Amino acid sequence: MAQQVPHIYQQNFSKDYQQVHPLFFIAIGIGIGFAIGVLVTNAQQNPLAEFFDGLTPENVAPELLGLVLTYGIIEIVLRNNQKRQSETALKERLIRQMGSTVNSDAIHAIEELRAHGWLMDGSMNKANLQLANLMGADLTMANLMKSSLMGANLERVKLMGAKLEFVKLTFANLIGANLEWADLEWTNFWYADLERANLMNANLKQADMVGANLVGVKLKNAKLMGAEFDNNTILPDGENWTPDTDMTRFTDPDHPHFWEPPSN
Image: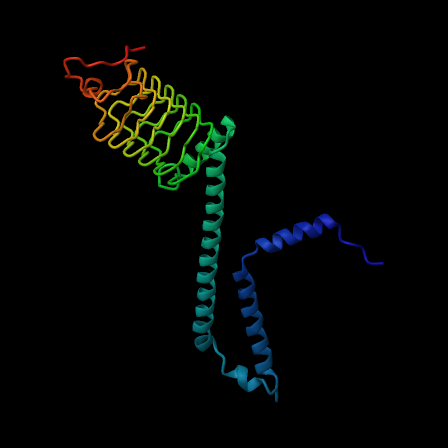
C-alpha cells in the first residue's frame, strides 16, 4: 500500500511551487525542447528530423530571447499594477480609519499615512473625516484641502503649516489647536470652538468665522482679508464682533491698541 504524503508537506510544496518564478519553467521548457530536437535530428528516417535539423541556436535564440523578454515585461507590468491596487486599498482603509470616533484608531491611521507619505501628497484631499476623534494628533504640514471635518474633535491638534483650504470645520472642536502658518483660505469655521487656539501667521482670507468662538485665540500676523464674522462671533478678548470692530488690533502688533492673550 502506497504511503500517503502528509498534508503539511503537500501544503509546503504547494507554497514553494507558487513562489518559483514562471521564467524558470520557460527556461526548463526551452531546454527540453532543444533536447528533443537533438534526439529527433539524430534519429534516421524520422519525419520530424528535417524540421528540427533547420533549428539552430543561431536562428532560434533571438526568437526565444524575444519571447522571454516580452513575458518578463508583461510580468513586471502586471506585478506593478497589482502593487498599485494593493496600495490604493490600504490608503483607502487608512483614510476611513482616520475618520474613526475611537481616538487610538484614528491616531494609528495618521501615523501609517505619514509613514507612507500620503498625509502630505494630496491623497487626503476631499477626505470625509466628519465626527473623527483626532484629539492630540500630529497633522503638521498635512494636506487636507477640501476635506470635511464637521463636528470633529481636533482639540490640541498640531496643524502647523497644514494645507486646509476649503475645509469644512463647522461645529468642530479646535480648543488649544496649533494652526500657526496654516493655509485656511476659504475654510468654514461656522460655530467652531477655537478657544485658546494658535492662529499666528495663518492665512484666513475669505474664511467663514460666523458664530465661531475665538476667545483667547492668538491672531498675531494672521491674514483676515475678506474673512466673514457676525454678531455671534466671540473675539479673542471675549467681546462679540460688531460691524465697527477693527480686527487689525488682534493681528497687527504695531496697532496702538494691539491685543493678544497673555502667555501661559
